[in-house]
Amino acid sequence: MIYDAIVVGAGPAGLTSAIYLRRANKTVLVLDGNGYGGQIVNTGKVENYPGFKSVTGKELADNMYEQAKDLGAKFKFERVINVSSDKTVTTDKDSYKGRCVIIAVGRTTKSSFDTYLGRGLSYCATCDGNFFKKKDVAVVGDGLSAVEDSLYLSNICNKVYLINKKDSFRESIKDIEDVSNIEILLNTSIKTIGGENVVESITLSDGRTIPVSGVFIANGAFPNNDMFRDLIDVKENGYFDEKLFPRTKTEGIYIAGDCVDKELRQLTTATSDGSVAATVAIREMKGE
Ligand SMILES: Cc1cc2nc3c(=O)[nH]c(=O)nc-3n(C[C@H](O)[C@H](O)[C@H](O)COP(=O)(O)OP(=O)(O)OC[C@H]3O[C@@H](n4cnc5c(N)ncnc54)[C@H](O)[C@@H]3O)c2cc1C
Image 1 (tube, helix red, strand yellow):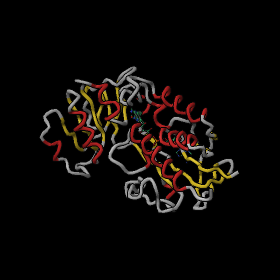
Image 2: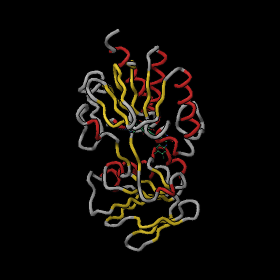
Image 3: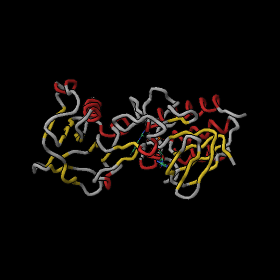
Image 4: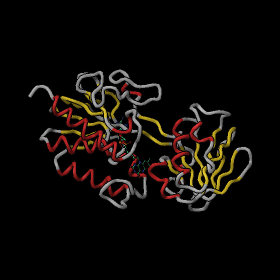
């Protein structure tokens, strides 16, 4: 069988694409190597997705998955290992043919402190900053995200420690230099996190222990894009080039979600991308 569309990734972007494709009566196969829901299944509370005052990430993912499935999207939980320009998608188990492919592979977060994830450790200041109102927090990183996250959190938190293991930043820090509640700590890194159930303190490689309620890892997310380099332009930072969004240099291959270079990686932007990619794909589908 040739599917009208194959969606790679069953995160919020891919699931939204599936919903839009099915509502346009297109046959859809969604492939994911880890189950459905993407990054959001790892978050306890989501409080910034319009329409839901407070919802668990798992509940939101379940709803999106059920909606796509009830509309008739087909799911296979297989890891994609190759996509070719003729829209053949190969997984670790089989291969499938589509008339178009939407790549929504998102990104993976990783640090050595992941046991504290959702218990004070976060990869997303915009998502979780509000849970640390008037508290002291640490941000880890040496690039633009670390600088932006620190600035964002300085409006919410009592004090922000920006921890950089190097002696300088990759980006200008002029926006945060004069912010009174941001303290920059250079040439040091977090050695251990203290706290029985939740983050209570950090101990740095220089021996200092600082009480904090939250740790934001600004340099711990990696787009899952490497295998698509032949089909899609990947920028130096690892993200898909957004210039032709949702199209790519390969006809019939579209991109959506956190794997694309953009200003803000959130549920609202991922689902928005998924709907745009599906709608453009439907419009441009060949061979009807
Ligand atoms: C801990 C945490 C908390 C968050 N909290 C919030 C929040 O409160 N509010 C908010 O708006 N946003 C939040 N976010 C961000 C939000 O989860 C992401 O912006 C959103 O999930 C992006 O959706 P996506 O579909 O683009 O990518 P992802 O969610 O990353 O999904 C991509 C999917 O593709 C799959 N995949 C990758 N490679 C392959 C492959 N080769 N073959 C098959 N499948 C593949 C993955 O398994 C995954 O399921 C949070 C993120 C994290 C990590």
